[in-house]
Length: 159
Image (cartoon, rainbow, N blue to C red; front, side):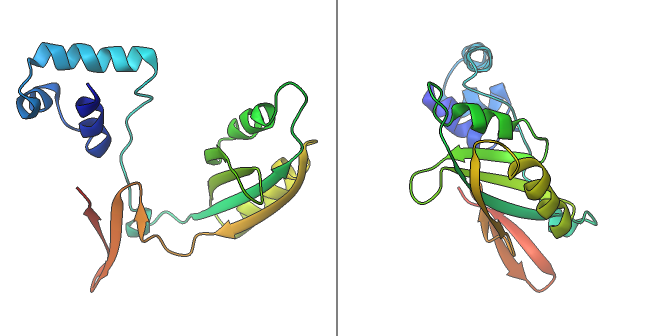
């Protein structure tokens, strides 16, 4: 069953019929397995990988490091869950090392990201410090390699 998950992770557009054929399984077995994975929360959703640099959408991506004071009985979970509720937040991770949380966000501009940090993150009671790092260029993201070609960015899927 892990083979089904691996295949969907690499290409979520595969149909149950295609997966069944590649794994020499019955199509209904694949459909049932996928449904069970969805019901159990193993499969959280399906998402397309978009190269926004090839569109007219203006945006900026930032990684925000956050140092927090863990809360009694809940550790870092409560503050991480609260931060994760903001629509700007794409990812939130508990980290080892010099900071506690790493938050990946996308905003319309550098100013939007700065305002998000200043108005929503920094004032939170448990937050002690933040450091914001802006993504200047993507080379690889979620298994997709971005390589420069003569006509801009070219996406190459790694298999």
